[in-house]
Structure formats: C-alpha cells, structure tokens
Image (tube, rainbow, N blue to C red; front, side):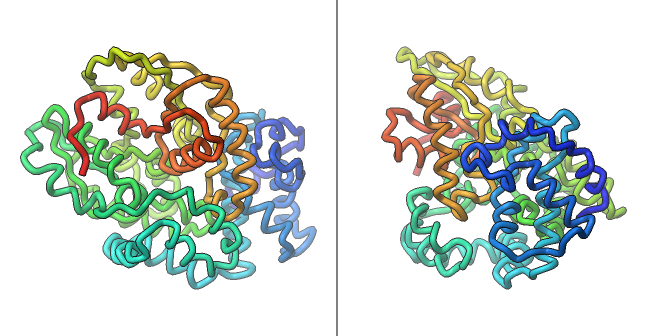
Length: 421
C-alpha cells in the first residue's frame, strides 16, 4: 500500500454512509463489496492481521469496485476509497504475480501506438467485435463473461480515425488557435465516426489541430493496479505533447481527460517530470470545457426533442464538470432538456466490470435504464465511450424507445458536420 494512503485508510470510521452510494453494494448487498468493507480489508492487510488470502472473496472485494468515487462524495472525511482499492490491487499482484498478458498489455502494447495499431489490425481480420471477444475468451478471468458481452461492442469499422485523419484536416486548418487532440483508443479503433465529429468541432473557426501519434492515457493500467505501466504511458505522452506549442490538449473522452489531469500526482516523485507534468496538466481540457468557451452556432431544429444527460463518473466526480455539457445542450434549438433521476449514478461499465462480471454490471445498469424511462427523454447523451457503449447496450436490452448519442456527435450533427464515410 502506498505510504500516502495509510492515513487515508485510518480516516474510515465505518459509519456506513457509503453503503447507499455504492452501486456494487446496492446490487449485491455484500458487505465486503462495500467501500467500508474494502477499507477494512486494506486496514487488516496493512496491520498484517492476516496474510494475503488467495480466496475468490478477496479478489472480488478488490476487483469488483467500479472506481466511480460515489462513496468519496458520500463520505464525511472523503476517504479516497478508489485510490485505496487501486493500491491494494497493486499489492495483490505483487503477492500473487501478474500474468504475462497483463504485463504485455500495460507495459508494451498500450504505450506503443504503432504496436497497438498493428495488433488492432490483426483483430480486424476477425471481421466482427463478437469474434474478437470470442478469441479473447481463453482469458481465465473473463471467459465466462465475454460471450455474454458480445453485444456491447459495435461492428469493427473499416477504417480507423487515424487512417481518416489526412482527409479530415486537408485544407481545413487555418491560422487560428493551435490545439492538440488526444484521441482515445476507443475513438481511433472502435468509434471513429464520433472522433470525426469531435475533429469537426475542433477545426471550426480555423483552428490548427495537431494529433501526434500517442499511446493510451494510462488509466486502464492504473485502475488495474499497474502503476508503473501507467507511468510509462504518462512519461511518453508528456514528452510527445510538450514541444507542440499548443494552447490546449483536448479530448472527448472523460476517462482520458480525468487521467491526463492526474499526471502531476502520478509522477510527483520524479523530479525530471514534475514541471513538464504540471505544464501538460494546465493545458488539458475535456471537450465540454473547450466548447463552453466557444460561441457555437447550431442549425434551427423545428422538431423539438426531449434530451437528458448521463454524467460519466470521470467527468462529474473526478473533474467536477457537471454544468458545461448541460448548458451546451440547452443552447441547441429544439432541445427540450430534462434532468433524469440520479443522472450521476454509475452505469455499471466502469473498470471493465461489464466484461469481467457481466451479470453484476447489468444489475447496476438496470437502475440507470429505469431512470432513463422515468425521464421520458427520447435522446440520452453522454461523453464517455465506456458509458456510451454500456448505455446503448442497456437501451437495446430493455427495448427502450430512446436514442443513445455521444456529446460531440450530437453537437456536430446540429452544427452542420460533414457527411461521414
């Protein structure tokens, strides 16, 4: 356990206010899967009251946490349970070892954009997302859940966003602000249409948009407990972006923007990166922050549509960005914005729970789908790729008459976005 978290664990007084806020506990009713149960486990391990048990219960306690930070907001001393869990996961792997696949994924594949692109292209040969998941079903901790989750991913696109990039910017960059785009892995490889919409919004008004060939932001590695893997990615990204001379580094992925802003804390013990990390952090903007500062003109829409917004945990709780996407939606002609109950309740897709424990993830998602129905909205908007895929799956599964849209896709469609390939 990181030394800085020892006092953090001691702050938990077992009051139980976290129980009502924790989606996993609400779905299971199991105390060891509640935040105070996880903190109790961490406290016992630190005190060496017992040695690391290899039981499924211990692993489930640590690895079925969504990392949504709902418990942190409900906690009076704001115990950082998500950080405690991530650190405990790191300790777990030091005790029992990481698989070769985990180390390859977090240390070699995700930090290297060219290696990652080559691997994805090989995956494209499988023709569909369903076949890709079936090919991964040999993974011992995922195999029984992957086949249940085949409908989560859309069909694999014919061309990645990176392959479309030259045509997207040709003749469209003016002499305006210099902006760097941090294109999350999901948008490059799985959801390029959404990335194309983001690119259109960034290029408006003659902005100069640069997209260096970067790797993953590092969040998957960090959340899984591989802190060094996350640092490898952070160092590479900082070096890549620091010499571009841009005013902002913008991403439409709430998970990416939240973790990119964490780089100064992640690299705080490395003197050579303290300054560069802070400089990088000062320029990172989530797309809703970037667009809120612009005067966007939308086409008139004479057909009113009732729209609601789902708050991604990494947008609302991690970055405290709540009003910006709502205000942008309210500015759109024809949009009748309605607030759904529990708009910030986690959808159940965080930390890959929908792949590792599909049934539990669906129980958590059902509460969100019930609230979508209560809102009577016809369009559900969000701004995290994981949330987007999870919510779309839930709408299809429940046969809801609601269209799930991504924030930038929704905006670009109303701002005369170019036709998609």
